[in-house]
Image 1 (tube, rainbow, N blue to C red):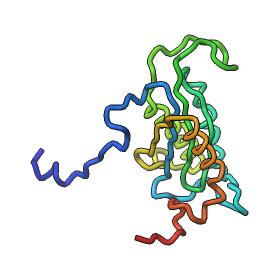
Image 2: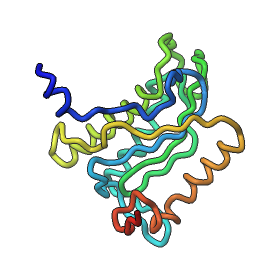
Image 3: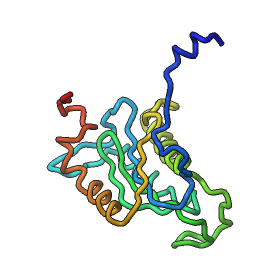
Image 4: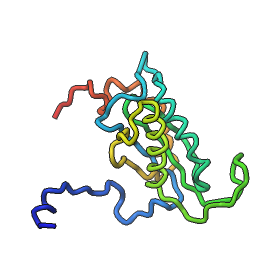
Length: 181
C-alpha cells in the first residue's frame, strides 16, 4: 500500500469515552440512524409515531435482545422515522434472571457495541427479506452512545425518549428541518 492510499482513506474515530470499558455494568443511552437517514420506520402523525412494517421489525429485534444476552436489560425505547433511541442496561450475568427459560449463562461479557451490532443485524436481515434486498445497508455505520451516570440523568433520558415524537418537527434527524449554521 502506498502512503498516498492511507491519506485518501477517511479516518474514523470512536465517539465513545476513551479508555472506558463498554462491557462494564451500567446504563447506556444509544441512538442509531438509518443509512442516509431514510425514513423507513413509519411517520409522525399528530405527534405520535405510526410504525411501518419495517419499524415493527426494529421493535421486535429490540425486544428479542435479552434472549441473546444474559447480562442485558432493556429500558426506554422509541422508534422514530429514521432512527431509534434506547437505553440498554448491562448487568452482571446471572443464571435464570427474569422470566427467561433457564439456560447455561454466557460467561463472556458482551460489550455495548456487540448488543448494538446485534440490533442492527437482526432488524436489517428481516427488513431486507421484506424488501428483497439482501445485504443492502439499513443502518449507518456506528452509533451514538452516552453513559448514564446517575438517576437524575436516567430520568431525563427516559423523558427525552418518551417525548421524542412530539419534538419531531424540531429534531435534527428530521430531514425537513432547515439547518441553520
